[in-house]
Length: 184
Length: 182
Image (cartoon, rainbow over all chains, first blue to last red; front, side, top):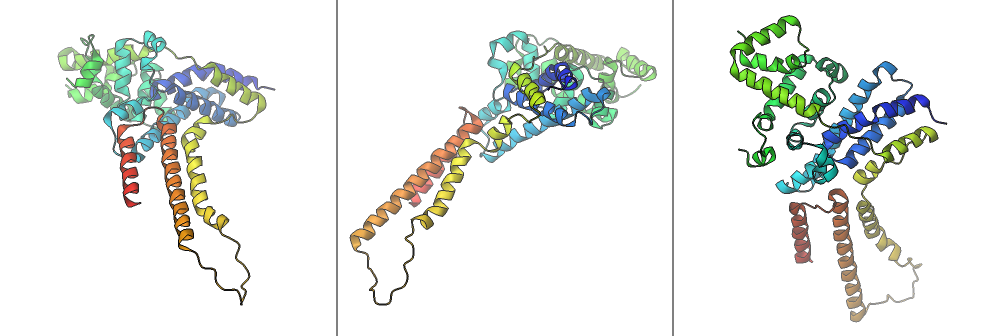
């Protein structure tokens, strides 16, 4: 017999959790695994988690799992010899949906370029950016979820924005990806 | 007037409306006089708009179904991530090969006969020694081939069909070295 509360939480939060994982990892299979693990943990702890804080709890879990998954990927790269830049690009987004026509239709060129640029940020920062700009969480909420100070988050986001400035030039409508690749 | 760096750090909170009235007024005053920080605000706004308009990605039906089943059956679903990344199928073969190398000599060894005093020690002929040597070389070559193939299979499990050139190159080097020593 299924638990109506868990089913309700699953239906309410699964797309948000999956989207966070997908935009963070850019690999549908990894995102599915992270989503599944997140809800398995919720299922195991459903009686311990405060119903009013489920959203924040889920965000924290998916954030940590995305970091773990990214580090695991890096470890695989490190253990198999000197990195081949081309291969590393592929590994950074092994099953990137960049070639998936359905996904591409849904994203503008700038969004795709921005996601590519986000992938170069530290995994923790990338996840914070997704929480704030995509999920619309306030800095104060993120600080509470991640046990950080708002000041630390402001600095982190400021540095990330500086790193992304190449794809955030207002006049950049031609080909941000090409400019990023040439570094011009 | 505050320095640009101090203002830039506040811009995210300013654009999100998370600054208190006093800080917001300070930032606004700075922006009125600083074109560089106004450009930074434009970038912040663009970032907010671009990421804020990313479409929600629906969770695949398979994942939802497994999680619903989990709730119904009260059992953890199969963790194919763990199976894939922690113990690739190829590594099972590696383990089997290593076990075979370790255990095979013991299994193939003839049971030791009870010592008999009067029986003369059997001597191997040169032909038998040559045959045994050939068998040994064949076994070693076979083991090397199995290990090599298994490594590649394990690599394929990790990298899919996109094995980095640096890695495939290292295989070639290893194979050459092994052949040279043998």
